Length: 274
Image (cartoon, rainbow, N blue to C red; front, side):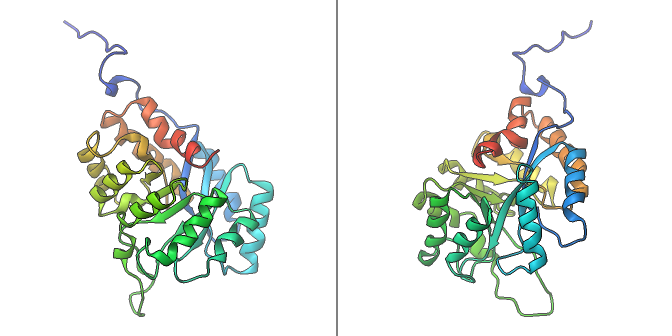
């Protein structure tokens, strides 16, 4: 005797099979000085159903070539590329926020602070971003090394997710995204995000199975799908693979079609005011 087909009232797992995404918003992608990068990026976005990508600059002191490319991006592709200006708290002046805003950047990316993100002296960066309505994507978790031979004044501990808690409370209108879900401090990221309605987590970066395992462990306890945002943080050629991987994994976790839509685009559109 065959089993009856699942109905709408059944477990979310049966709501809809994984789909080919047509409206993805990527909150984490890095600019490349590679020749023809923007054209290649847009081609890969079109092929993977990515409508908007948050592209991160190389920093406030970029060369004239990159400056010119950003001007062209904002003029010609402002509806597809959301510019995030990279800054390092304590390593640049507070005017960096004004500078990025005046150039057309709609958000910021923070990384490698000289002290923990929530130091008193850094609050001015965040207050200014809050005034401009610029979301901030914070690198959280262990950061990659720039060199294994040269001395580096960088501490991953300064970028733990818990340091965003004070910022979220101090700037209640500032929209905060914790990159990589704080890898490996997942529980810390989930708890901090749960307590702050103006904080979300991106699922970008390597170690997909590790991130998926952490999501599954905390799902419906300290974490809901509404807090997750799709991010790539890989070369654009990896869009199809990563989108398909996360679509399948989230489906297998029992996350409904509606909730997966939120992860891939719905929530990001609200966070970024798209």
